[in-house]
Image 1: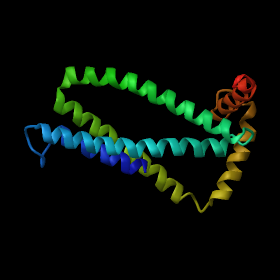
Image 2: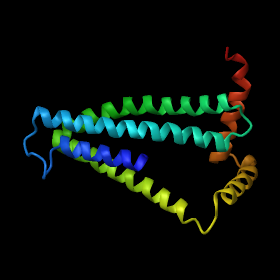
Image 3: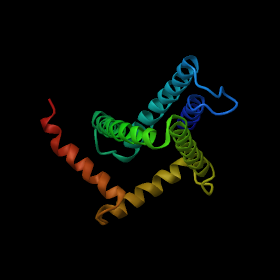
Image 4: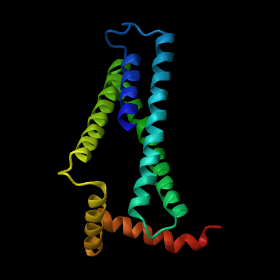
Length: 174
């Protein structure tokens, strides 16, 4: 879903820019259609990212209750969404001032194409992962997670710290 969403957003920004084969001078109708296509892509990415976050939380935080796992994933997602809205608006305004409408839209389309390539590479890597099936990967990841509990600064250790924080502060949630 993330790859499709990035592709649709990329198309929306190419229509907003506008670049050939689209109309050379933007019209109100063209901008409305481009914004609608962009909104559809954002909706696809919204669904894809929140479901991916909750699935990862379910796989990595087995010692937490399902409500705590989903609450942690959702709160991290909302925090990232808010930070992205703040940084994105500031960067978008600066990009528009420096590059203009067409080039700033092309820049966003290129960034979406890059994210589409990253998603595609992750999907292909998971499909062709040396014959390992999902159960073997989970067992290997459990071993890696158990070994890294004492390795400070790793992602697994940071996740363990977040789990510990959530479980210790869960008494304060009404």
